[in-house]
Length: 308
Image (cartoon, helix red, strand yellow):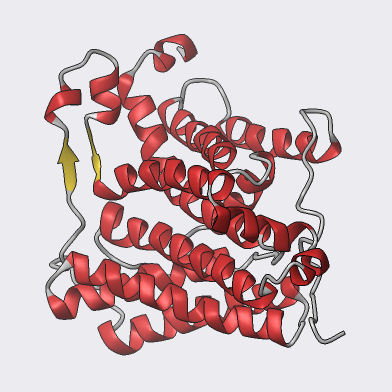
């Protein structure tokens, strides 16, 4: 049954769809941590993006306005996170967890206050699925890539663009420099705080995009804690992907594959819990050095005060 499932194109299409809300915050975490700021607030920012995406889409009657509103809210909460951690040198992990708890409570409160216990209306506009005519008719590839939600294609574009930006542009080099040696970067004339703000804000917007994909791309509604821990899974994917955009995508696809396969094999004699456990086990092995070497940026999580 396992081999038969692996040959099903819908399994691989589902893998890509389920990897998207993991790959986007993982990519966002890569930006943040490459600049030297540990960001575990991705779970909370996803919830913020998911809720406000629905809110703006419902009142504007436009899913695109909802998407834009979600990105703005993700950027705003990221500015707050950056101010507390970069300017005030607060503990980045504690602040991140605080944002996660705050976002879970805030979105649940606003959901009940604005929409009532009936939940968000099903008439809320949704982000469209797109069929690519040049790809949809290609055997094997067509069923996987030919028809997906617009955010899935946007995610693939962002991953490639981010790889080029981080490793082939001067600004990307500067962003990575402040995450490796902020003192040397400061001596060279780089503004460490501004570059770290940039990394955190980009990361927050990408995490918010992952959240709005859940609410407006997949479910067309908001539910309490609908991110379901994907922000934390994205953190594992980012680490397993060695803090690179392409590596994070590969790890996200591994997690997405485990989720999709566990659904396909339900009732097939293989425990879905074991299948979903495998990516986490590989992440732990990666951290211990048994599956390649996984090294964070040298100054990741270390506050830097240019006045000292």
